[in-house]
Length: 441
Image (cartoon, rainbow, N blue to C red; front, side, top):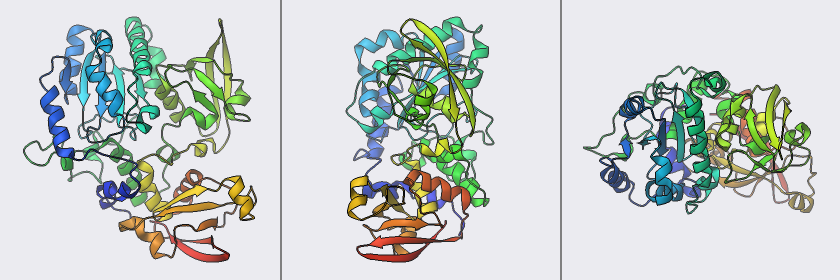
């Protein structure tokens, strides 16, 4: 069955049962109130990158573009702090500030960032050169988290880069976006004709808005409609440092808080307290910059990190084995809901912990994915129609019975199987083992 653009338009209602993208009660009013409060604010160029770049060129200041999904409660804390925190104002004064509340007109050659975040920041030179990215999953997961410490450090780093520009421009090449086949999100086939470049302020604003996550959703559907494997970087976008075993300090720019045992990072020689100065030759302003470097990393190969440990600087080689990207945990990403519809027919799966495995006599090396939720609408009802139930434990799918996470399974199915295929699966339901068929969409 061919995937369709309708798949994207229904996404917000499909994710509602698990409330992973909680929104304000009156979304329309929230957007209009934001515009009323800030469109005449002297600091902010409201939804206008063109005037922002013009002001940056005129003043010689760097440009700070803040992308905010106003109806989403995620990141509400840091967004409020950026707008109202007095201590942040002197730092903001060094930038031309642009507030973007929708993705419709984004230049996709410039705006390449973590589309699943509700609050992101990109720092530019007036000539369009990108200095760096900021985005925080700490704030995404906790709407009450108001700390701007990590953002302040990113802003300070952007100013340092700006003061050294253009002599440092060669060091910024790796941070720039890659060529995009589409100029703006509304040019992507499944969004084209459904949205315009401008919001409908005279009608219903919210339905006229392209949300950032819809960009990646639409790009994945383009590949699916062409019967192509979805590229790994679209399945596992902007990998968190934890993917290679590095847990980063949440309020620092790029400092390692801890290193997971037997991980890629541990084998590279990282230690707790290491400050990563550059990764793949790129200056790091934030954890989002680390994720960008990983996003651009090869499927197999090496990355060089320059770290500061105490007073000494040293280089570390990060060796990336085949399949490293699939270790990225994508379970909490909004964009994963669309992929669940394509790959597992709307199942939300969770790898059983070792204790539960012992109770059910399942080996720790075997597949055991508990069905936590079964979708009921549209493409997400396919698994339910095929007989899957909440509480089932998937122990074999597409001939794979070795242990894997939901994230690994989604990537495997989207790359190895095409829409219309019917995949054999086996589940444990109580004391019974049942054979079911899962349709790829």
